[in-house]
Image 1: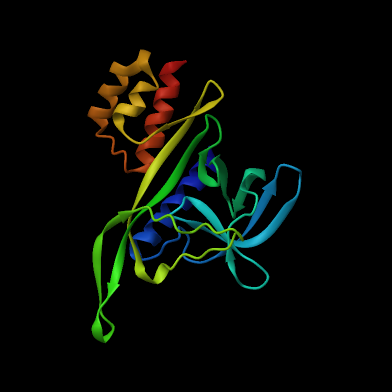
Image 2 (image 1 turned 180 degrees about the vertical axis):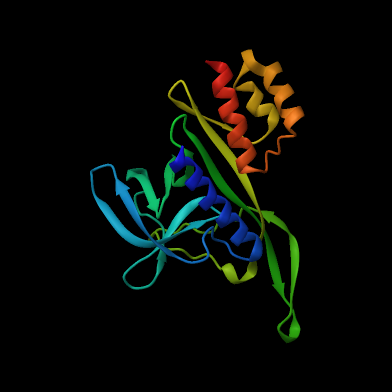
Length: 214
C-alpha cells in the first residue's frame, strides 16, 4: 500500500508540472535516466521521456539525437525512478498505478498546431488531436515540436480482469466491465461524484469495484 501511495503522489506531481507548462509534448519536465528492460534479459540505461502525442517513449542516444525504440515489441518495461511503464499495444506504453489488482493509465496529449505570424508572433490553428508524424524508417524522431501546443492530457485506464487488460475512459465503458455490480457501482459513482478525469478518483473506484466483485 505504501508503494501504491508513493506511485500516485509522483504521478499527480507530474501532471501538475504539465499544467504549469502546457506547451510541452512530453510528460516529464526533462529527459530522465531510465532503465529499459527487454524480453531477452537485456537492460539499458538511457535518458528518456514519454511522448504525449504518441503515448510512447523517446530516448536520447550517444550522439544526442532523439529516437524511438527500434524494436518496441521486445520491450517489456520501462522504469523511470519509482515509476514503471508497461507496453499496451505496438510501441504504446502505460504507467502502472497499482500492481495488485493491476491498474494502468495511458497518457494522450491533445494538441494544437501554431502558425507563425510576422514579427515573431504565433496564433493557434484548429485542433489536430494526436499528431502522428513521429515515425521514420531509421527510428529517429522527426517531430517538429516548436509548432505544436499540447493543451490537455486525456487518460485511458486499464484494469486486469481474467488475466487480460480491459480499457475504459468513460463511466459507461467502466460499468460494462462489471455487469453484475453495475447498479451498485453506478450508485457509488453518483454519490461520490467520480470524475473520470481524476486519476486518484478512478483508482479508488476501481478498488471499490474489485472489493465488491469478490
